[in-house]
Length: 244
Image 1: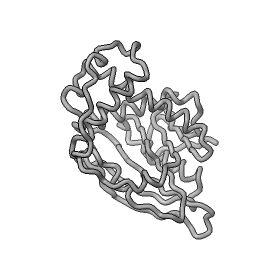
Image 2: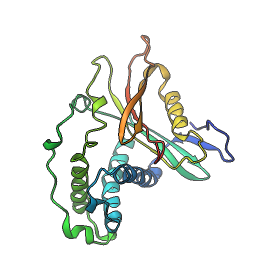
Image 3: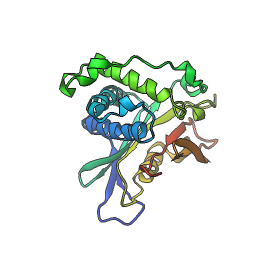
């Protein structure tokens, strides 16, 4: 079930297709790079977390649970993975997984509700190859807590407060897109392919963009028809580049 597409002139074609287990590591690494950009470039972590000597350890910590999540999601009945490949290299992917209602209804929390986690200390000095799952969890929890201490910490939950009891809920909780210097519309192409995969009549879309450290809603498109047997509410967090 492969399709091709790019929305701007390009010397190379971007091909969209369903993802497999073999794509998991590439996806984890790609998402890790994007998450690192969001956390570090947008100043969501403390200075010690942004120290370059800790970069490899924190990247590994971000990747470890991500890899488990991707593998788990591939086995879910309603999970949909779509990947974009250019010149044999994974350049983007979408992952839609079932999300519990209580998460979608989660209210914004005050920053003080998230106390700073303990510093991982010597764990950050370990070679990446020696980090175990407990180390990764400790680093990740600490790094996430640093982000939650900032004014940007709860961005992303704001759109999850509303819910519709008439439809099951799905969330695009990851959109990882490599640098799109040629402006090929990789993310847009992925979304178009995803719409074709699930059927336009079964989806409604929240579109957001990143602006000066914040996500702001830029559009809402209702695609669920009365004839549709089921609907899906999709939260689409768009990060098109470092200067967005």
